[in-house]
Every structure is written in C-alpha cells, then in structure tokens.
Image (cartoon, rainbow, N blue to C red; front, side):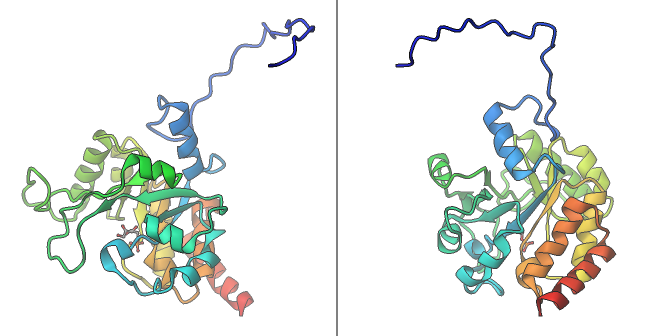
Length: 269
Ligand code: 5RP
C-alpha cells in the first residue's frame, strides 16, 4: 500500500482550459482511446499515413513468387514498414516477436486460387486469437457483387462506380480502414469514404509504374499503401520498400521515388 502523502494537492492550474484534441484520422474522432491508440500505431501521427507490407498471400496462393522462404524474404524489409499485414502462420515463421511493428492480421479464410469462385470466405481467426497475436486490426476480405455476397448487385464490374459503392458499403458496415485497388477518379473514392483508404498494389508492375501508382493514390487522398508483390517481387525489395516510403511519408513524386530506388540499388551493390 502507498505511504500516506503529507503534501497537499493544490496545483490545479485552474486558468488553463483543458485542450480538446482532435484525432488525426477521419471517422475516428469518437472512437474509444484503445481504438485510437491502435489506429495511431497503424497511421503514425507525424504524417497520418501508413506503409503496410503485405505478405499474407500464402493463405490463398500457397507458395508465392518472392515469398518461397518467408524467413529469408521478410526480415530485410521489416524495419522499413509501419505495419505488417500477414497471417498468423507467416508472422510466426518470419517475424521476431520483438519487432515492434503494428500488425494487420489476416483473419478471413476458406478460398484458394484453385477455386474459380473465391468469394466464400469466412472469419478464420477469433477475436481472442487476434488479441493473442497483439493485432492492431483484423483484416477481412469482402467480395461485393460476387456470387458469395448474400444479395447480388447486378452489372457491376471493377469500375470507379464499383469501388465507390464497395468502399462506402464496407465503411458503413463498420470497417475502420478500407484496403482497395487504385482506379480512375480515385479522389472520388477517398472523398466518399468516411474512413481512411489504403491501396493494395496488385500484380507486379515495373517499379517506376508501381511508384507512380502509389504517388497518385496518395495525391488523390489515400492514407497509405499496403503493398506486397510490388515489394517482394521487385528486383531489389529493400530498395523498393524504402522508395515507397518516400512517397508515403516524404511527399516524393513517382519519378523522384524511382530515382531514389535506382540510387539505393546502386549504393547497395
Ligand atoms: C493477398 C492480399 C494482399 O494483402 C493484398 O492484395 C496486397 O498485396 P499485393 O500488393 O500483392 O496485391 O490480400 O491475398
């Protein structure tokens, strides 16, 4: 038990009003402290943006080019990411528990690339298990307009209209962060979505194009990127993740980031 304190409590600074602090991410002003704390780990307040490294591909693709040996591919990239987006198995295999990065834990399961219709995923990780992995957020995948969606939405292809609808629906259903693909008129997608949007990289592109896409996404309102194949399938993955970082956190253009990539490659040889 604490000892009795003889000093009188009297310094209440009554003339200093309490500061009302807004939160730096949209849609989160009224979230609980713990939620804001986890979101701030994902989107560091210094820029309000995030660089997620995605390496959860094995949960549907099995051994994926660039990720054949998780234990060799991932450690050199860890220090450059804000968030690690992965399955429990990949984290256990490749990431030391003392790494200190935020975790976006892949929590859906059920389909594989062998199945023509991959839209029937279910939640495969319980909240308690996500807590055991110290996840900052649980990543679930939805397939709006696909056969696995309960009510079908007619005639939707992956157009701006599709992404406007899908991102908004998922946000209104309660998601705190939306990951989607980049598309034309992306500024409308980010403007119409009440929570932060990050882009997935998608299939491997030439490095300059991937960096230009990241730049455009950020310029058009994305709060970050969650890129996998364009990092670990790049000719120089550590240089590539650092180049993406310059776009996300330092305001580099796609061209500047590509020059940075080339220079970083040269120096590491
Ligand atoms: C794999 C995923 C990935 O996390 C997501 O697609 C990002 O990776 P990439 O940039 O390679 O598309 O959901 O199932």
